[in-house]
Image (tube, rainbow, N blue to C red; front, side):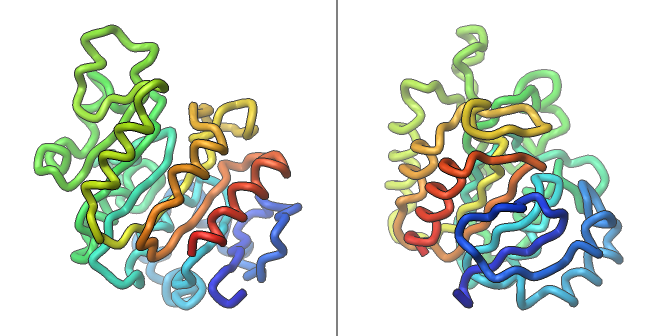
Length: 249
């Protein structure tokens, strides 16, 4: 189990079903929640660099999702990052280290070739809110976001990357096939799941656990992490998802 760990930042997983080795980081949790100054993120990285480097890491709530950018520092590249998330996390505004903009920290790493965020269900990918997103990276082709457009006007469905429940698997399959032999890193924020499958204090997404199981059966996976937005993921759903992760690594 050396390649699997649970970094406990806030007791978000009290009944974690796989019995992963636990690293107690709760003393750092309150300081790291949602956003953190660069000085503190550097201190945390020095203390937990080895723990952050394991191939699969389960940690805390979605308030700590930005720590994925730290994990990626140690992933052997080049790598394509795939994020399943109800939020694009592409905001270019301060703070530099925080949940809303951590994808930009990943893009700063030289071995991260491309980032794709799938399943965005909130307002941040649509006008006028998208003006705060990293549109430059999107136009350059190194970042793509795939927001749900089922409940949007017909014209919005023409947005680059827009997906529907009826076609998202086809679009995802085309995307993955285009990666050829690229190494893939997958990160999942469990707020991307439907409200029936995860209880969260963030907006709920539209993926099912079965969707995510299907999506992560990909080749050349170099690492993975999963975060829970202070939720009580159902034992059945959480166990199925994390077991599939373990089998994939």
